[in-house]
Length: 291
Image (tube, rainbow, N blue to C red; front, top):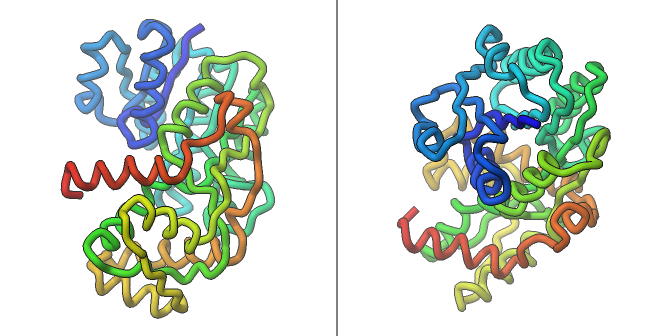
């Protein structure tokens, strides 16, 4: 059985690869990357590095050749770009006679009104139409997405949000990587959907845990969307990112990420990393690197 991880040099993909290297021989899987030179470190460790660019379908035929189990890590961009890239990947998987596709999706993609859900829903549907056995890994919100806010708090700023009382199942990428690797290597995951969420928490509950880690009270400033956009822009966030950040806050406020699930226990045999421990890891990382 030969497995392949796409996007293997990305933030999630690299953690999936590192997890695989702890559990299976390097000869059993390959990686597909847009820029093979960035994966040279994997090549010297015995991992087969293949050139696969979702914008260049001809590269995907060789990238997916001889692959039994494929992990497609979702790409990011505008609607047209995302769907073109994803379609190229799925059609190439069909041509290569891939026997199983795992795909990293988003919470409750088939029904959610969260702004990211429609694109993930379309990508899930594209895989369903192939008839290839699948597993949809519906990831909640990366705790690492909050690093900018955590840095601000560490520097003395309040926690700014317009998410109200909406709850999020924050989870570390490492937990998601381990769950993903287990699906890719394990049996019995054909035609499954996993809702991969940490414990649901409000912004206030998250910042209370952060305060425990930092040893200080973290003030939370609940504002409206316009004020939120202006404040994060004033903090140096590029204007191009503002719509996404505001939509995230609105989606959380409207309950778009509030999905209870015990699927992590099914895949890992444990719950996600406790929030205080997870925040402690991030704070330690920020302190060591300065970013």
